[in-house]
Length: 350
Ligand SMILES: C[S@@+](CC[C@H](N)C(=O)[O-])C[C@H]1O[C@@H](n2cnc3c(N)ncnc32)[C@H](O)[C@@H]1O
Image (cartoon, rainbow, N blue to C red; front, side):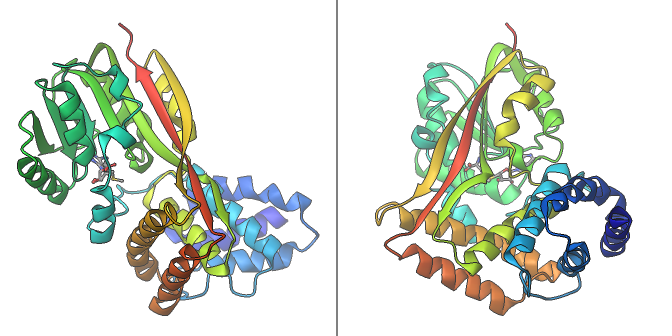
């Protein structure tokens, strides 16, 4: 009975997507077995949360237990989401986010790949964004060539400009799709996807394509966060709302916030011979480290803001309140925010 009610509500809420959400709903239905017998209220609140046309407060009059259950619902949906149509990159055109990307370097963000690079190697950086990591890879393999590809023309142009500004000659950037790389089989010694796999709706297809362009024995480095494994303290209602908004936006855009933990599985499925993952953390818990983490969270929020407004999830005032809260929270002497980042190397058989 409860299953049937859930199905009807969700089908009405998601219209054409109803077939897509059914498995997630069924998965989540398992949760209320531990809840007190309050299914009708729980069901009503889920329906409220998922009505797209309602400009609302995501947590309006919902108990903490229900908030938790609904968050799990959003998370399970993010995991099981199968896109009905091609997705656009979640942060496309978000200037503040792009500025954050420019702070990345190979020595920090690709440190786990660097020991595997040698002078003269040919390296591919897929989803290279503004290319600051790519430029560091070029330095590591000089005079070998590094190629950066990205779906967004604006990112390719920015990467060109930075390469010229920094006078790096052994690098080139071009627009290309991770699913259809314009390169010959076996033409690279190594490749990197830094915070890119999580955005691919069909990651195995993307990984098969990288395997194709890697030479026998070649190595692929993947780096993605596992946003479900995060430490944020002290929690505030606005910060909770931000985290929920992030999962909701990820689910909508086909971004997998748990891509990191799946690296090994996905690589093996795509035909890589072996894969090894390690975890590091990103974030801050001191006056020195918190400001950059807070800047990143605010830049992320800028991208989600567009989606939240388009979808009618939150209005401008609520989004501004979240931003103000995150800023104030970042100045607290007791604030801590850390996310697990998965770093994985996968090898093509020799
Ligand atoms: C989070 S950014 C990471 C950029 C860069 N790797 C970095 O860490 O600074 C993700 C990048 O992947 C690109 N991207 C997303 N889907 C792609 C696809 N199918 N093919 C190529 N690039 C893609 C986006 O345009 C964006 O620049």
